[in-house]
Length: 407
Image (cartoon, rainbow, N blue to C red; front, top):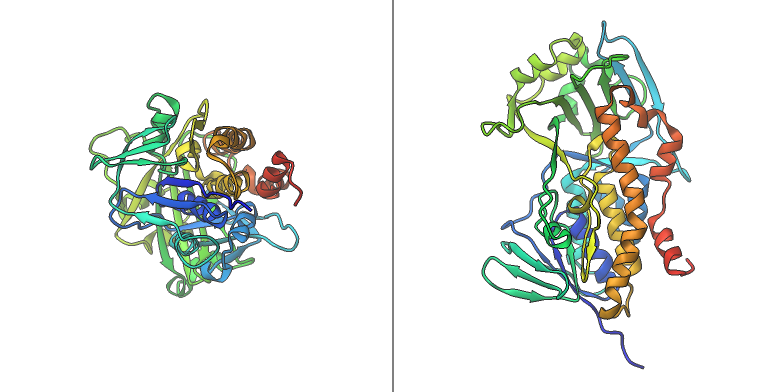
């Protein structure tokens, strides 16, 4: 019996998308190496939602949920930032087979994927090459060129190199930069024990344990002021997110941090109990410009494909950015099983493209509308049918169906 030859796979980027894809493909017996431009990979950002559609893929990859130190997300309370802030309503989040979405610190998810990709397990561990910046990709040949002049030949190249992807330009044949949304995201993690000692913050503890959203009710304005908060790290930390419009993003003097006093001034119209939380923030917070990748004509070319933010960076409204990257990885793992031949790769990548693109584009469009169209804001938390479409989806089953494989 002739043993199946593994594919030589090169993945550019060691973030969530790259590590998830590396795990899926090493489990299929392929030889995976990852090229990461940073000298060490530290996942930025505070916390993250891991919805049910991502959990299905993570279970397939063999993750241990306890390693995420997660908190269940069963419902959300939305508070009115207008008037005295006394109005609120609860919105249930969808439950499927007794399971719900969870929240965790982003680095905990990244560390678990790093363990799955490079630690003991099915297939040979993926190898991460740090301080290895890719400057060129030839999708038709399956080659990468690094800054030091090395050329790496591969059967398959995956561009998981994020919103500022290098591989994207070589797949498209032209540069497509991410676009400004006009919004900025300020994030930090707060100690729940310290918040519990503040009487004015009782609104964080009352009712169901879960996310809190603070927005002005019934206000259709281009001015954007929005707080989103949820527990993580086994309930010990609170993830704080402030979203606000930021017309100065193109200014060369724009700085990736903001002071507590600046945020207090931006949210001056919010009632005192919500501003009290802002007073608990550190003196300075990191901030990120929220950018997105417009709809691309294709994600694949020859022996190369894009996934995650390189293909479809979206706005955070639905909590689906990382989840869609994990879905991409699950699809690639299902479509490139052991025994896949190099000559079959272009066709398999086209199948990946056809399977993923329409769904991702709908989610991207909804994410954009629900952040930028005033009357659409907060819709996802109230629309159980759309939640079911987003989180009830099983990408692994869809990929098997596309190949005509029984589960």
